Image (tube, rainbow, N blue to C red; front, side, top):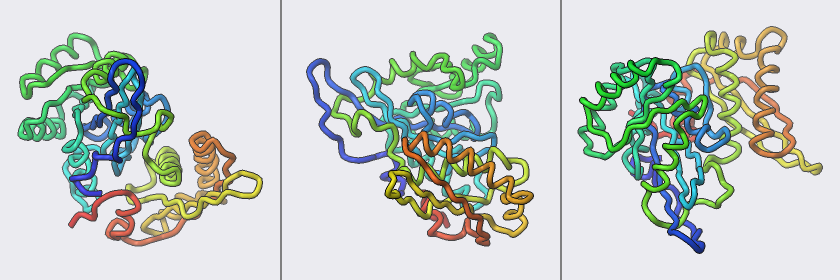
Amino acid sequence: MTETDAASGPEPIDAAAPGSPTRSGFVALIGAPNAGKSTLVNQLVGTKVSIVTHKVQTTRALVRGIAIEGRAQIVFVDTPGVFAPKRRLDRAMVKTAWGGAKDADVVLAIVDAERGISEEVETILSRLKESGRPAILLLNKIDRIKRDRLLGLTQEISEKMEFERVFMVSALTGSGCADLMGYLSTRLPEGPWYYPEDQISDLPLRQLAAEITREKLFLRLHQELPYASTVETELWETRPDGSVRVEQTIYVERDSQKAIVLGRKGETIKAIGQAARKDIMEAADEKIHLFLFVKVRENWSDDPERYREMGLDFAP
């Protein structure tokens, strides 16, 4: 995926119906790692389309979640967290994030209200200001700080950059999200919808399944397992009884990491598989037989093919 096509999506489909004009467009979420972008997308869409963990930079590629609000179809583009990149994978993720913002109809700058103005937030505000793109400020996690501090933070950020609107929300509880959705439904341009009414994401099911397993992997081992691990769905096969056999491979970079993922007598990978299978079944609405394998692939983060699998450009 390139910067130019990061948020362009498919050609619109005709969703015209009697009544007021339909609206549709792409809303990119830009923020520092762990600002709550993925949690917010899941909240606004109403179901899991983006994985959420305590580990920073969990989101690696663009994930589009699709929501309907009145006559508007809002396509939320969840982007990787923006931070100071140190490795090739980091650079590819940050490039993808800004590519998602570049072509969106609306940019939501999300700030963790509890954390305040970090170095990463300063960088994001500076780059948004330089771009001249109109943006909406979204203060998240407002349930964790006092109102006077929240108002002071809003003023401090607004002095650094002028925003089209400011919203205060809690992605976890949903507080303030109805106001945001109402505004976006009138802010997007008139036009036909891009996706069928019942579609909630453009992520292929086998890729979503891999992301779900990666989520469970990080949730279980976020202290022990280094960042350099990934999951790929190798097989998605419908069986005669209508159930689906899914085979996935967890790639790590060293034998010691493989031992961590497997756990004592295979207990860890069994627990990861059970948790992932439950969510994959819910997403696919089919009975799933999940088989997990762990392989060592040294320096996988330098392999262009792995980047293509993740939907990222191979950064130099």
